[in-house]
Length: 181
Image (cartoon, rainbow, N blue to C red; front, side, top):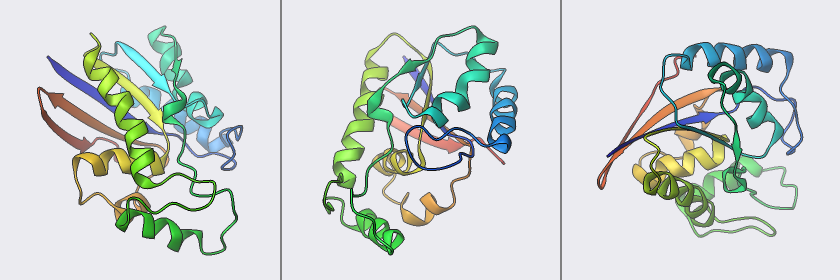
């Protein structure tokens, strides 16, 4: 069986906390995203529990008359519980050193394992077409799992929203970017 997993990065949000809502622009983007995805066949929609992720996919779920499953394994990766003025440099280092871990945070490998578990569960399920909604950091790590060339620079080029299609057939996986925004 083929598995088509549509990986969606949330639309523009007011902030980074788990309860940050979409901006007015983000709400418009969510409606544009719903139109963009309208022709795809979907069996399941799974979202990060973060408000901005759920709000991103809500118009699409409503149009498809589908429920949104929430999975905490799709939450954004926590770099650290400390505030780093040079957080971007710290983040970049975690793409080169996958086991590097800052206080109170997750290593890249830990976060990657968390999101690949979700994908493995999807592949083991009867669903052929699944939408997952998550965040730039965790999505980058998922794509890095399938393509070691997907790293920090590619993370920086992700847009809000963004859409990738991950196709898995037997033990082969390929992905491509669908969003042209």
